[in-house]
Image 1 (spheres, rainbow, N blue to C red):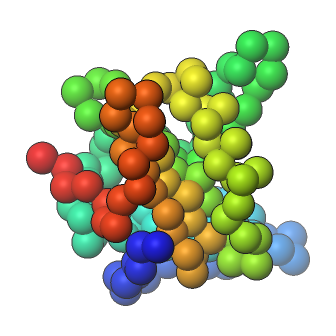
Image 2 (image 1 turned 60 degrees about the horizontal axis):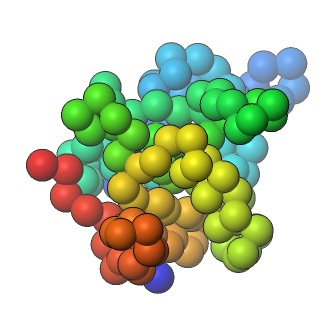
Length: 144
């Protein structure tokens, strides 16, 4: 399990039509502040502020095709113009389990990233793919 010390960040939050919204600086839009979105926004700040991943190479909530199905990944970090890392976010009360792993592996079929991570804000798990096998990680990799 990876422990993420989230950095401080002045999130912009406001109510729109009676629903709390948070400004996503990556998508440059206001989005409904769901428990999953809160995890996603904090994790994004961790990647940029703590790990110094380039924000311009991070995609958020983009659609991909899995055969005939349209799916949306949470976060993909690019390196050398290719997907390098896929991150699946869940709200805090959702356990990271086999179902979550199957979801991220579906995205992996299309994106073929080197790293896979999943987080519910309290628990974070990651793996590196080498020779077609998953190898558990204790930390996020450096972005060099």
